Length: 222
Image (cartoon, rainbow, N blue to C red):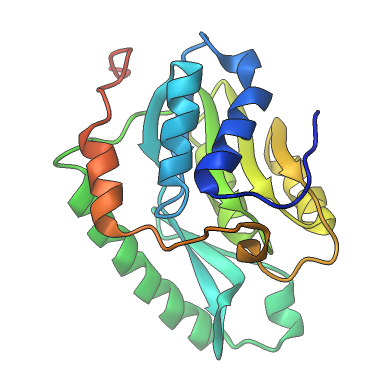
């Protein structure tokens, strides 16, 4: 696998590089599932390059008390909670985890209600599935997405992202059939430090991408 220096002009620039590393799936009807909101612009580029379908996978991180950007776990669309072992070492209580998971699940439900009228969910069963994220710090959110999707029986499950620390990559390896990434730098403090432009992706941009995404190339499973 080709690796790149850990500095990217934008998410879109990183997506172009990832698409080059994913050409083995071009023409194989891949389903590209982006983690909202940041990965949607990347997912669109990759899906277009591979002539695949684009959709979202809805998971939300559970942030540490007082530091919500530091993921200590995640909740998926089914309501299942996935916790990183770091949560125990930090002494994070079960009540906090339940309360935060409930709050994040409400965000997931609101997003699904927002997205479905313009872009119904695509069944991943039997598909080559490529889960796209811009970057991975602890791996809690991407890990939750991969576990959720594995239960839905894709033919092959791939995770694609621009950047992650080596220890996180090692933890993610058992959860996917393949990991495709651009770089694994150390030290690693935050995903955004490796992008020149790491602007927030707004809801309006996500909705516009989904609104302009063609329907699936294959009919859904009966």
